[in-house]
Amino acid sequence: MAARILPALRQVFVLPRAIQGCQQVRALATELKTAEPSVLRPLGSNRRVAPSAGDVGTLSWPLPNALRAVNPFPQTIQAWMMDFETNEPIEILDVQRSVFAAPIRPDIIHRVVTYERNMKRQGTHNSRTRSEVRGSTRKVQPQKGLGMARHGTRRAPQFVGGAKAHGPVPRSHETQIQRKVWLMALRSVLSAKYAQDQLVVVDNMEIESHRTRDLARMLRVNGWSPLASSDQDPSIMLLPFMDTQAPSEFKNLELASRNIPGVSIMSASNAEVYEIMRHQYLILDRKALDLLEGILKPM
Image (cartoon, rainbow, N blue to C red; front, side, top):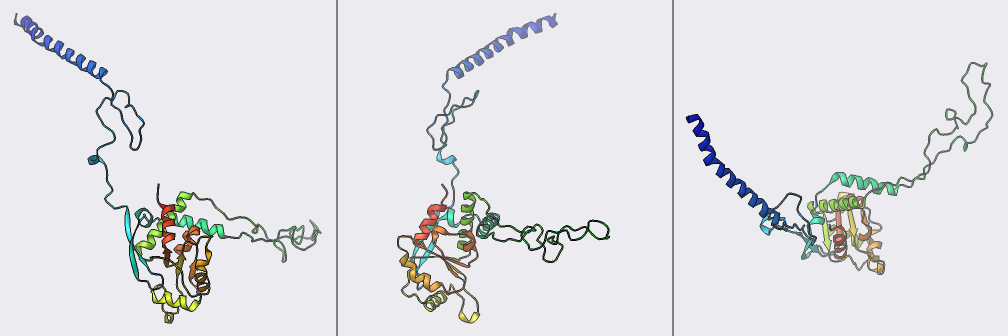
């Protein structure tokens, strides 16, 4: 008897709870269907992006400032601007960290240096083939009967005065590289010069004298060139911004630096990674600094 009553009591007390739970689930599902879906907006965009199917949430976009990742480093670093003739500090400049404190990538520098040096190869090497060397086309000896090797002409490479087998021919050694890779290598070289304290920023590079001895003495007094008693050549790269409209400003500098071994001058608009890397000191003027920052600053 008890075995029949207990299941009946369970149905009386448990079944209403199950019905009540189902009603709550149905009411919750109805509320979710009638609720408006949340809208996500990516950073920097006004386009409305609906959430994925089945996702209903209250996420607001963009995220509040407390949840965003903030760069702890400032966007700029400091560098001295010196006087070109006396090497005395004038003021402190704020330069872009992304240009002069970028990660140094030796692998990218190697790729770009190889590219720039291949561009400078002339490719005019040539050797004469069998059709270009002097000699008769007559068969040297009979094909059979003499017990010696078979030869058809004296122009063959194995004979003295013969042609060159698989010799070099005039061709271009140019290779291709992406512009972003070249810009990354230039940032790496500038960052390496800044980290090694070999980057000098000056106000301008206009000098009054065109004499070589005056410029050599100035570089030696400023500490950019070794002493004359050391028998070592300086290693200085002058990188001013030489505008084509006014090249006379640097006429004295070009004439004075022409006869100093180890001192090179190049416009900042034609800067090369290999030329900057092979010199010890890199000297920029203020206009060249602004030009490089405008070109190399990431978007």
